[in-house]
Amino acid sequence: MIKIPKEKFYIVGDYHINHSNLVKGTSSWEDKSSCRDFTTLKEMEDLFVENTNKVVPKDGFLIINGDILFGNKDYLPTFLSRINCEWKTLNFGNHDDWLRKRTEFHPLFKGGVQDYLEVAVGKRLVCIFHYSQKIWRDAHHGSYHLFSHSHGSMPFDENSLSIDVGIDLVYENHLQYHPFSFNEIDHIMKNCKGKPVFLDHHNEKTT
Image 1 (cartoon, helix red, strand yellow):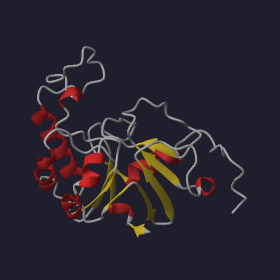
Image 2 (cartoon, rainbow, N blue to C red; image 1 turned 90 degrees about the vertical axis):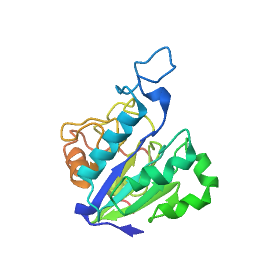
Image 3 (spheres, one colour; image 1 turned 90 degrees about the horizontal axis):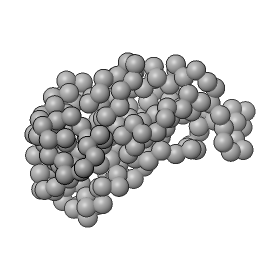
Image 4 (spheres, rainbow, N blue to C red; image 1 turned 45 degrees about the vertical axis):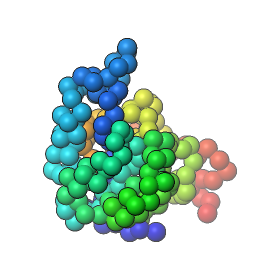
């Protein structure tokens, strides 16, 4: 299991670089209500790169939680080279099947590529998957579950230590189009109003 210091942990999902239908100025969708409010793909990418480099230090650990890039797949090395952080890892999303096969790109991710990731941040277990789960490892002992994929369409559940960390998300202490720091995630989780509800036979007294 990877151990990451709290001050070095960062995560983002759903960059969707070069996804023309997600940008209002280039989308062919009739209903553009779910599109990002950019005129061009370059405008979106430049802002995402700027915000990532502003938030994540060069010696940080950046987890990219799926759906990284569309269109010209050979552009991936160029996009990743624009992000200053040297340690990156990728959880495959539903739009990353092409990257499973392009193994020559895998070394670009110093932390590797995988479907699912468990990370120890201090004493906290963090379970990371592109898709939202109802149950995850040690949920009954306070572990966190981070997902993306849904672009903020899933209602926030105050009774679950699980949140969407996609780049589109906005929270009280987190700006849209920025990666999440662990401190931001910790603040959101600790300010949940409800008590976690355990959906299987486990509870806080079981092992």
